[in-house]
Every structure is written in C-alpha cells, then in structure tokens.
Length: 68
Image (tube, rainbow, N blue to C red; front, side):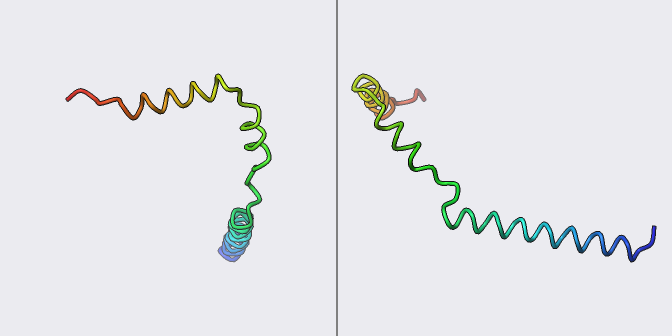
C-alpha cells in the first residue's frame, strides 16, 4: 500500500475524530445531556412512604460504624 494513501487515511481519521470530540464537548458544555424534567418528575412521584424509607436508609448509613 502506498504511504501517501495511509497518510491521507490517517489524517482524515484524525480530523473526523477531532470533529466528533469537539461536538461531544460542546454538547456537554451546553447541557444537551441534562434531563431535568425526568429528574423532577421522579421527585414529584415519590410518595411519603418511599421518602421516609430513603431518610431511614441515610440515617442508618450515618450511624453505621464498621468493625475494626
């Protein structure tokens, strides 16, 4: 295989990879992957029993002391 073809294929691959990386970084920076609506909907659907259970679990975690 000609080294010119390999060089061209490598440079095009690196260019396309850089474009993809820049696009993903831009999307993360602009909050494209944030799903606040789904998160807030799950909070609204929690009942009193599940909230009390979560609070009890947190209290147990804080009071737990591992054995030496």
